[in-house]
Image 1 (tube, rainbow, N blue to C red):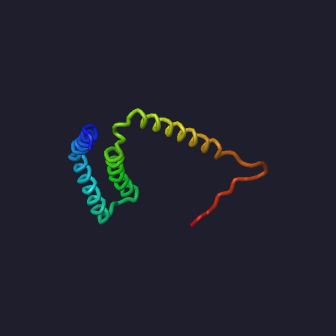
Image 2: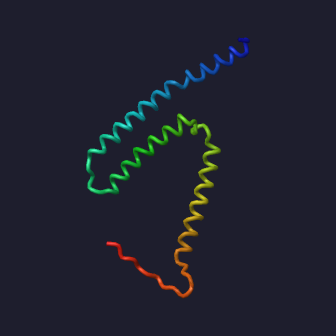
Image 3: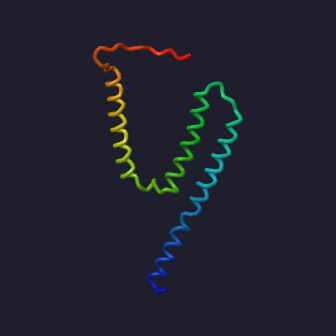
Length: 117
C-alpha cells in the first residue's frame, strides 16, 4: 500500500470515527422514539385527531433524525431549501388549480349530493 493510499485510508477512518458519537446519540434517540411510540399505543386519547397529531409528531422527529444525520442532509442546506421552495411552489399551484377547478361543471349537468350512511 502506498503512502498516499494509506494516508487516505487513515483519513477516511478518522473522519468516520469523529462522527461516531453523533451516530450513537441519534441511534439511541431513535430507540427512545420507538419505545415512546410503542408506549403511546396503549394510551387512549379522547380524540382521534390528538392521537394522530402525537403519532405524527414522534414520527416527524424520528424522520428528521434519520434524514438529517444518517442521510447527511443537514449539511446540504442550500440544495434542500431550493427543493423545498420548488415543492411548496408546486403544492400551492396544484391546490389553487384544484380549488379553482372544483367549481367547474360540465354543460347540462347538475350537482348531486351523495348520501353515505
